[in-house]
Length: 276
Image (cartoon, rainbow, N blue to C red):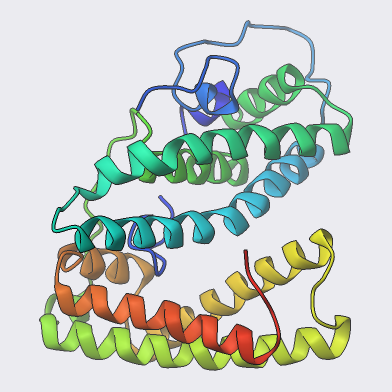
């Protein structure tokens, strides 16, 4: 969708988180130079419906991204076990970007079908409302484009180094390690609590619909844990992103991420939940 072009995802556990599959894929419109034709007519989709559609696409992508980031870590570990190494973005571009592109296309198509609109109608509506100053649509569009970029996609986004607060500026590696360990502990507690609450209300997720609902809730629980700890430490999401990017190649930091993944799997297994 071209409206995603002219519009950065907060750092999550994955630390992320090429060529196109084909011009017909949704990802093509993330960075194409196609400009929608000017029209004096109002878009076929009103502003609120456009927001609902874009939010629905973004929510489904937020469920997908942690899976791909975990897959990236697993692939990187397998490569390293062979005695080789691979640059993070090269790994994303070679192994993960095709999956992101194809899933984005599927997600977009399913949401458009659900709302009974076509892609051209959505593109025109979002272009029009963003041009008119709709900040919510602009933010959603930019988030999707940044996700695509984090998996190795081309983009004309001007990357800016996140500004650190005074508290973050004072943090060295030891403080970052302590922060990440505490973040891991809190995330595990939030995950454990959420799993129990979800199962009490819905049972162990079995259907695809319930699993997607569970995954979205799990992601939101992790975000709550992150937000609570950052507020307690006087830090922002941008601070966390900056700190993680600065130390992403450190073996101790990578080890913490791996431990968090394993702990997460143990909690899910304890509740009888098998994540694909």
